[in-house]
Image (tube, rainbow, N blue to C red; front, side, top):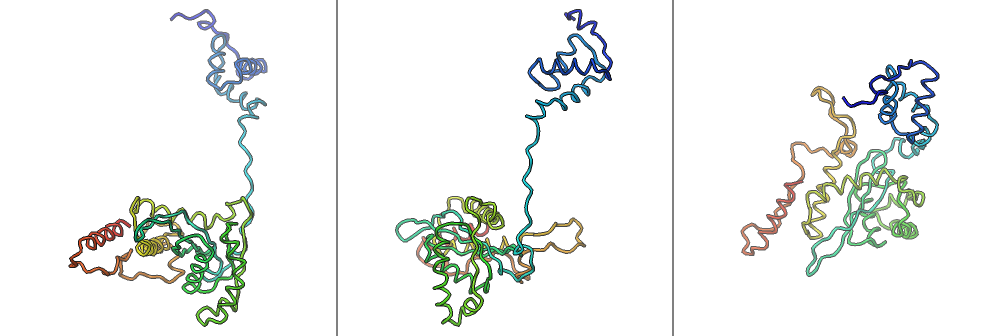
Length: 309
């Protein structure tokens, strides 16, 4: 091979020697603090060090400049979970609220945006979904009223600092006074609701409901795609998604069939399915024998979407 004399007859140096360590350090600095392979290549042009790769790794590991740029950043220590997240309580006593992104729905003449209000229990991780026509305070309070009437009174509500939620808090006192005269919602007036906002510009404080927003949006995005539904059809789809999300496992799924079944939010909500299949199909609201071809096509379109869920 066309090698120089130094490469053919390298100087053999002992591995455990101060001179060898200084030589490795000098060569490492001379080539601009490159990695192990580059340093070892330069050394072997003149020298041979038994187990040289291990020695080069050791010297690079203790190099101050390399330590500075290769060091791992310190991780912020996570604080303790709030007491509301770990205290035993019935479902939907401690609630987090957030809106999903806009979803186009089909109107009579044109399409318009709608939004999904997500209510999640901070303890049982169950979800409740409400479709609203816009993000106004009026629509949100109506969605909140529907949620309370179905899930019962909640003591604490967490939300971000969106304008809709702040305005809703100011109107909540008046809203509660109205409910005092209503037998349908008197439990809300008796107990009241404590509204808590997370720190501004710190969305990770609301991670317990932000994560479920993603969980809800994924099946909607993958199944619906560019499908255009009416407001009522999308409301039905959301009820199906709510059932699916509330049946996700919260505990590890064992391989042994003899082990207990995984715990789900539906167990806390007592939403057993029995022998029924989910998601539930649309009730036959449209007569399949109708003469209008558009009705039959629409019915088939709905059925295909729901079967994909």
